[in-house]
Image (cartoon, rainbow, N blue to C red; front, top):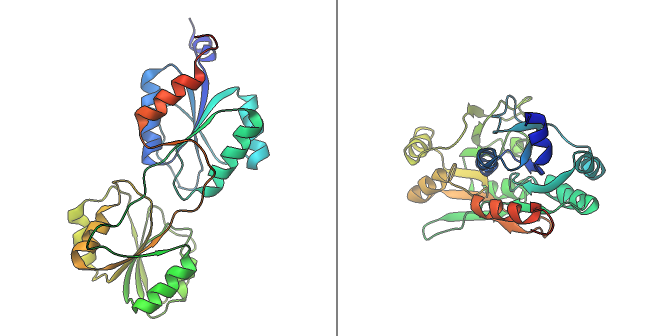
Length: 261
């Protein structure tokens, strides 16, 4: 049997990825070889790491475009493993899958939760984070919010910022004092301790992304009694959700099983 005919006989699955869970799921799907998986990356990161299997990069053209794409590619199931803060894609996926009659599952890491000793200040958005930094009179801030969401913090001319991101923020907003540090997780606890001490950080701003790759900064902050301003996750549609790869694979087997089996 040719590779083309073998692919045609396998159910086609769309995997919306870009997270560590998305890459792990892509590898698990590729290893099983019972599905034809098409990975989709948003394309916001230059030279993104490519997951196992076929990959497309870029948007779909909104809800209507995604629904049309699902029909055109005979997608049998969609797996949403996008970042917890990629809310727009989550809503688009839910609406498009409903229009196209395609089952949808959300694979999402649990959020971080505070433990004794944490000094967390949860906010809904970055303007609220700016006001909290003013209230705390923070002077040296680790800013780990992504390169596209820096602008609100540039108004704080009394603070120095260590901006950590994967790719350079171009253009960089007009901060009074800032340094950009390019780095990709996972980050070890030893590295995060050294970072906070070397740069004399007195506050951290980040998103409640969850997961193990970037949690070490919260542990290091707890040890030092530093305040952490944490953006809460945005609301998402009421999609069926699992938190681990095995559960996602089990769901996929159920929904793509031929009728009558």
